[in-house]
Image 1 (cartoon, helix red, strand yellow):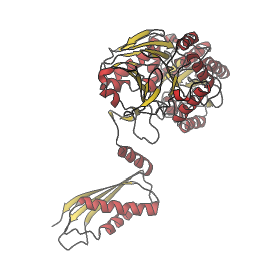
Image 2 (cartoon, rainbow, N blue to C red):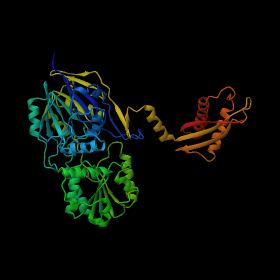
Image 3 (cartoon, rainbow, N blue to C red):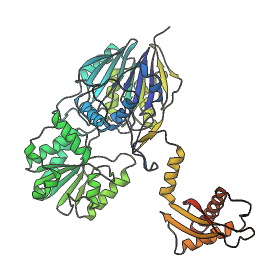
Image 4 (spheres, helix red, strand yellow):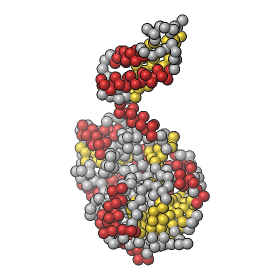
Length: 557
């Protein structure tokens, strides 16, 4: 029988986020990344979303390790939940990646004795697999491409990457090593597709530093507040260096910003003198023009440091006309409205605001089309599977691969739950496995009942009406008075004065024909009330609130 290996796609396919892929050969499985994603507007109360790992749990005895490409949340965010369900799995990643995982494990009270630090260029053996970590340039330190040697050939996983020829840390991607792999022969390439719709070449991170330098030079008499991703150590390093150049003190604001800056400093990925840093509580001791605040909130997140500053809810920093605020990030699709709300609020407070639409203050960490072509040309894979993108991204990446000479029959566009069987001579789809979303809501996790989300959406959109009916047990034949009292409580429902009286009339009318003499079924009474009020409220108010009747019983002699 011909040797085969199987790829199982559990996340990061048809979406941005929640990346998780399993590679299986014989009785060995390795997992590439364990990411999470954030909820959309239609998921009220959900903190974040992680992949369904039912397939992994049913094959736990085969799992040999988790290989992390880098430390972004969409690649490591679900790792604590994976390890809670399947303890004891070895985890491999670079120094910053593992430091971020250790922090997550401490928060979740998980032992971190199976976390293993590797260095770019290291080669490790995990089961049947021999894995080489190759330095990649991305928007976080420690990102790697993976060259995975299997008994039937090489698998190359790009991870997240760009080709930056002037990287902040001075460490370029080893193009020679990539070309060497391609010349030796790569059976399969898994390639990220995020920026397939962006032509040309991505901007260098160093160019962002030049734009920020100009902003510093033009705002010598103002305080600077710069919002960026907490994980973008290269951006933070440039801001600190510029602060030193322009004789400013630096304060970090936002929990994740403070935590990651501390971790990156401890392991040497972020470099500064302690005398250049001040606590945010003490920022008021310094003149405005001698400070710069690096904070979270570039995505407009409601509870982030910048959002709270923009609404005046952050007592440590009061924004005014003496401030210039820089949003050094681009909005993630879906966050545009929240970002612009923050921008508008900052303008109202009198601040000057600089964001990507006006200045080149952000560079993507993901390859544009010409870089994607370069990667494909260097690796020259026999088979190609696009990953890390919404479905249109994957399709467009597959078209690009065809334009570079890869046979259509050798390309597979997966969906969540897809499996792919690969031999030396062919690629074919295998049986689907269970995959999807697991919702994290506080301490609760699970495949949340769709009715729960539907109820939350209903409450968010239309509000809630609670009707408390104090029902009388009457002497037979006397239905003239059947309730002693009725209270109406509304939340999130807009009504006119006298609404409670309207509800009483509707309920009285609806129950006037109810046979109290021969039926004491409170469930039937609740159904009658709910139907009558639903119809009345929609006809008069054109609203559809959630209605919950509560029937109390009183005894009357």
